[in-house]
Image (cartoon, rainbow, N blue to C red):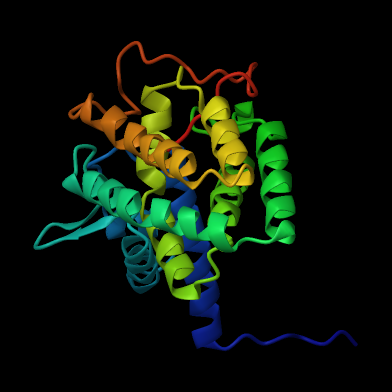
Length: 251
């Protein structure tokens, strides 16, 4: 006689919340919700067939990751496209990450060099765009991109700084996607190669300069189009799906 597995109400709610969170996070990342769009708990609950409590728990999580705002007396919304936060995050990253990269170049060993080279090779060989994931870069490319940048900085050996990097990376993910969509001709492949070459050559000054410029261009790309939504921009060029290794998105 087959056994029946019973799931407690609290565990069931947690599983539902995780599913709704994943669905909502992916939808925001894909651009299904444009910058500034309201995220109405009632509508989301009806769409997903779950309770308001489950939806609110999921919304609180995406707010914590910087993928949504909780507005006083107005509920939840996708961050505004021209939100000052993107410039502040970029400023914070330009302040911290070049210092971490200098530390990595000073402290990193041969194993670190090998990991940097491998991470860059994987990034260069991963298609940035796939048709089934829409107009924004693919989740596989996003992860190899993150791993390349984190590997560059891991040589610093400072876990507190690396945890800070992780938080800032997550908080800046929307800005990266929007900027890449609005600036499809940016040569991220070349920028990444220059980063790898300067780091492995142990040229700290050049590496820090390349990284600073690398981080600046994303925020600059958003500032150039402060009121235009990546989802609705008229005549916005499509990402170069057939040429993923010639032009790739970036910060």
